[in-house]
Length: 203
Image 1 (cartoon, rainbow, N blue to C red):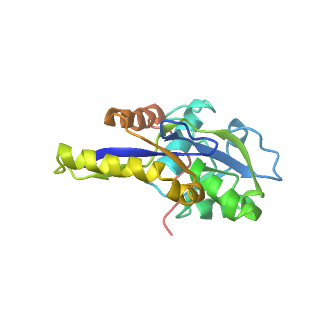
Image 2: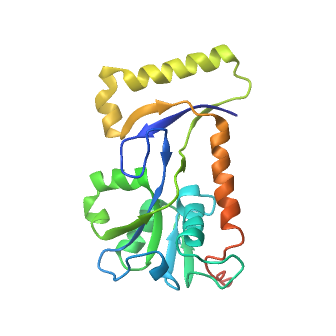
Image 3: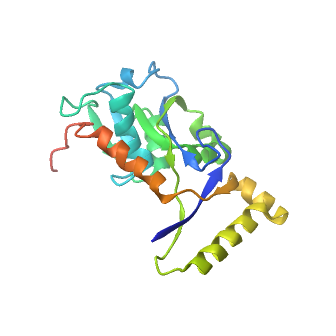
């Protein structure tokens, strides 16, 4: 595939170039106020292949909490939930102590499910990375790429779509160099062989 464009979101944790971070949340009624304080607590994440839910958390543990790669596991447990909203539910219910939730998802849930997000507290943010992009096939030629980018630019500036964009928190479009996604690989390298938690024994 090849990169077409990157949407820009109007919410805390997102930048004007289309980069975003995840928010680190803990139960609102807990005494946890930093990532370091969550050592040997219970973490949850959405899926094993998630940048925003797992890699962002691993990188934050390594850089913000100073956990060493190859050492003892940082958390007492780290369980997959299947989705960011499910992770929030676990933290809100006190069944988990911390999760990393992508900033856009959290902002949308603050709007549509404030009773859920009110039960958690943000204690920090992860490193910013490029967001989920618009892509097309490598077979698309230069003319097709220009048409796609023009169409997206029109959609993001059309006054008739202003309400739709606002509902989705979309506020702009960016056309970055694909090399910016190397940052994700750098975060993965920084996290290295960090162990979040002991593997669960087979059931």
